[in-house]
Length: 624
Image (tube, rainbow, N blue to C red; front, side):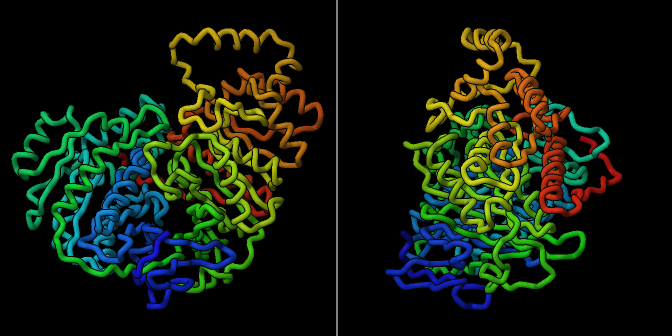
């Protein structure tokens, strides 16, 4: 429990939405209705320009006194998601050493306002870094250092001129050449995900899409040195890259301290959803920063903003979001309020001024990804739904994102009883009656959405790329870090299946359907009719969205046969079998389908005309 004397203030100088105590008190932000944020060493806040607020997390020493502040610049796309907890661990390590750390999302990335496919996105990302440096200086930091991971290193280096005096710079597995980065990302995307609609000029990377102007700008960007003011520099580089020409030139010019990274690909680009956090390397980076920080100390006084206007609807109404901690386990959550024409200040906006939610939506993430959903899909949908008077909640369950401590000895599992409890907690925290709440999730998050709907009821569910179709979860899946869940593969996979899979495939075609369905009821097989019929009997309409591989899995589990049986009983199967896309939904066009179809559910359930996400293709196409 955080018990320091840090003076956290709102923008007008008053305590933010509650009281700030002395050394024996805890900070409590927010209202009883929307949850209470109890601060340990991590304070969530909106910051930056009022017209484009950014999400940040201040990690503060428990003493309230620090020697310097470090701004952490993250990657983008899939790398941003994969490295999220690792970046948070570095921030925690720095705070434990008496150093303030500040993590943040660039404009158009993560939970911040804006769109990543803006033509001037690169300029906005660099401006976000300058805003982050300004923020920590306003907190009282007399010395500032910067850490950039992957593309964050390239962006940080290009933003240094606008940051004032910087004490030290850490280039962590840096992207040194934007052209190489774009080519690698495009190749990775093409091999892993497939091709996009050629009429859309945006440039896709894993987990994101860039405007052609932004992609072209990146291709022309290289890591420039020497840095302004010649700050102390640490170059943390993969062992496989140490001999490259770019790294050799960088080392020769900057004369940095060098840290060799081993098996770092398992952190920045893991082959599965499981991310191997490099605990030892993170400790070494934190130690280097600690050794080069000044000895003098200063008081930390962060300004905390819990509510911000993050979007404006096509009709001109404002969309606000509030930062919360919900439930006994203090799950970090972001609440998107219904769009309004009434201006709110940071002091009153997270209290009762928005009223009790009448229409709601809760999002559940897949695997161990944090709350934003595939390629920010949950962020976009939540803000789209606000125009339909929907209150949305996206949250991190325990052990994910910004909820709970990071423990190397207890990695987070995909399915767990605590995750089940957290899902119920989130729905209760939303505040709307379950029968007026839409539950949406991808893969394991889809199964969670269905499970919650069966327990509490729901207005509707949106199941994206679901692979578990039983109402029972096998014991082998629960609390397993790498569960032996069904494997979804592309049609090009030529790997010989194991004998058990061959036998199961034969059973699928030879067993009478009633026997196959019985196995599904017991959780031994995944029979779509079992889950869909249970939801139908509960009175919960369901929208199913499946990528080609997931649709094939659906058919292999005799889903078509089950739907035919249900149709004869009056069931209307509402499904989109997409012609493009992949299971994790990195594919740009599949994410567009998810967004469109989710909004069609909102319109159908709440009686408003569906709004199409606005997109006007720029006339220019990228040359990369």
